[in-house]
Image (cartoon, rainbow, N blue to C red; front, top):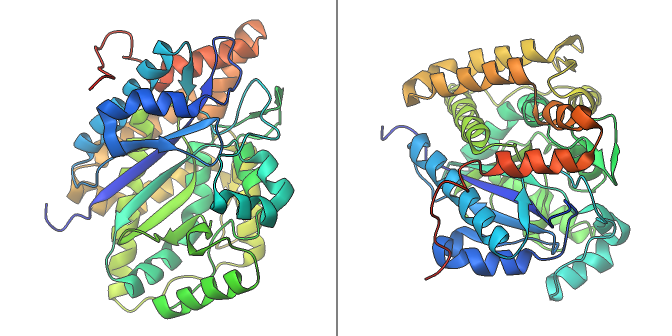
Length: 375
């Protein structure tokens, strides 16, 4: 399995109280979870969020176990403090605008730079890191992955609610995030030098706090020899995050083969990419998406199946084909996260039921496993 790239995953969660409202108690949950998870748990830019991380590895089953463990530990830690954590791309209940921002010089500079954009930062994503130490090759691989970003967004759409109302979108997180000057897909680039020049240009133009705040949905990591895919809402379950990581790694492997043949990647029209993002955020997996090569509307399920077919050789090589097949089958039967959130609300018309369902699904084994949060 030495030819299979290592992968790592970061998941973000919201902290809620017993009534289901988001609360600025992330630091307390992190402190309680840290003895068990160490550096695999931390805070985020707002006091409403926490993040868990896996170690890098090649075996997706091991990674999936770490994802489940991280969720179980933080959920157990939250419960011991009279709180809960939920895997949702946006808050369902409570005051999230403006969110309380963590303190520090970097955050102060961010507040001064981005101002009202910080008002909607209480959003949660999942980030998949795929090993690629050759930065020039990573840039070219990203060219091939760019057209897939809207489909990956649709597959993981899990943020239909904002300010205690249904937005009508499957991923409101993607809509709010798209307002940032350095969000969305990266430009088509042909070398690491050109990538760095673009980042420096944006920094000099005042659009970045530092090089680590290039928030493209696909970027070269500032701290690791990886290509980082950041387009997705945090999924409801750990199994979905694991399947997403498998699909992203396989797509990167297929793209790498194309790069090695001398293919620098496609260049879909920016206008179509923008529309495809919007459609994926609006409909998720319940409607239609845009084929960015033709502009045609196609069922979201058909676009997902086509993406899986493209990735299939690499999925089979890594032994991850069944994992992704099962994920797509569950999406076809139960819908994306947004659909499931709305189904929970429809039972009695109470948004508290949405939060209860999310908390139970985020770490379903937390009540049956003994998870130690003490040293």
